[in-house]
Image 1 (cartoon, rainbow, N blue to C red):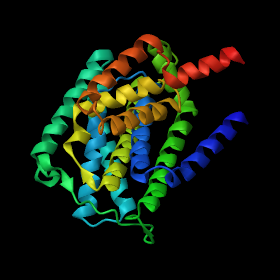
Image 2: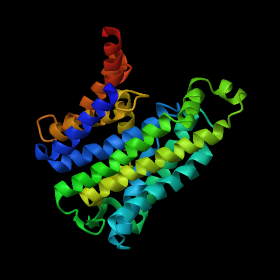
Image 3: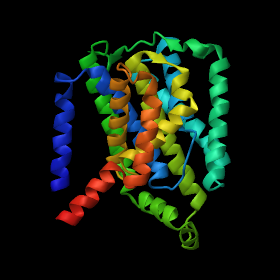
Length: 307
């Protein structure tokens, strides 16, 4: 009951937020919260460290932007095409990488993501270093004008809520329990008869698809897809968001994304603009050394001990 009440309070805050905070900033925060939550699905619950999720985030951004600008698809369909393309790319990369573990898995995903990055930088449809600009927002359901920032915010909120609910459902389903068992003791899970590779691959594809959904939505918000979305730095940022917020928690990655996006947004316009990467690096080191459970994990542990 307390958890349900907490969700209602968060939903009420999200609905009222654009009345007090710049909607475009909120939309960026939501997109990265979904991206981090999607990444947490494989790292926090599957124990798979990927350094290639920027390929799904950026790849979906380009595909969705191209579908909306050149093919003239409706906004919802364009975002869906981007998300599905990320899922297909996730299936291809996952099939190659999933039989490896630890650092070998991470390096394969990084290598494949860098290959995708060089494809994006050299392909005509991406606009190269200039990016894919002028992506139209269009109309939602054929009647909601998404050029209005507030209308666009509620559209993005609906998409991200659907993504969060899907992640929560997956984590608390039998599939999620098996995934956690594989993370904790892969040999034991295998001895119980579970097809380890199939579960890992399914989790990887689901994570890639949701990461693509976040990237495609971000492209519609900013009407731009750029190489920054597909660079390996983006893969590093999503790792930082997940660890900072709380690995293996539902709300943690969203909280971590909120902290990082807020810092980037406000530090970029101040005297520390050139030092943003350094500040984020210091935060990462402090997180690893001082509160390994992340913000949400430490808060949850504090509440458990106190009450």
